[in-house]
Image (cartoon, rainbow, N blue to C red; front, side):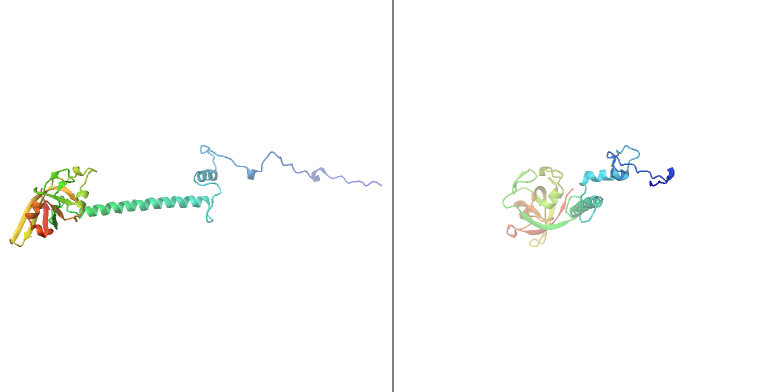
Length: 221
C-alpha cells in the first residue's frame, strides 16, 4: 500500500543556500589601494603605506611593531641631533670664553709672562716679514695669534704689525727697563702671555746669560 506524503505548505519549504561564487573573494580578504587624493581614504591603509616606505613589511624586533620601531628610530635621530647641537654650542662657548681670557688687543690690561729671545735669529716670520736679530720685533704666543686669525693666510693676521711695550724691573740698575716691539711672528713654544724677542731687544731688558726672564707688557694703540 503506497504511503501518502502529507503536503507541506509552501511557506515551510526550506530554501537552499546560495552557492558561493568561485570568482568572488570574501569581503574580509579584499584589499583596496586608496590614493591620497581619494576623499574617502582609509587612514589605516595610508599608515601602512607610510611605514612601508621606511621599514620592510612584517619587520619586527624585540616584540615591537613596525610603528614602534619607526617611532624609536625617529626619537634616536632627534636625540642625536640634540646632543650634537649641545656639543657644538658648548664648544663654541668654551672657545669664546677662552678667547676672552687671552691677552688680545681688545684687552687694555697689563700682562705678565716669560721673555725669551730667538735662537737662532728670527728670519722669515709668520707675518711674512724678513727680520734680523737687531730689529725691534717679537713673536706673540700661538694661542693669541691663532685666536685673532681671520683667514687661512697667517700674513693677514690683524696682530701683524701691532706694537707692544715691554717693561721689566732690573735689580742691577734698581729701576725699570722698557722697549717697544712690533709683532712679526707666531711663537709655538710660548704660553699665552709669553713673548719671544729679537736678541737686541732681550739684551735691552736682561743679560743674555739669563736666557728667560719675567716681564710685563701691554698693547699700544
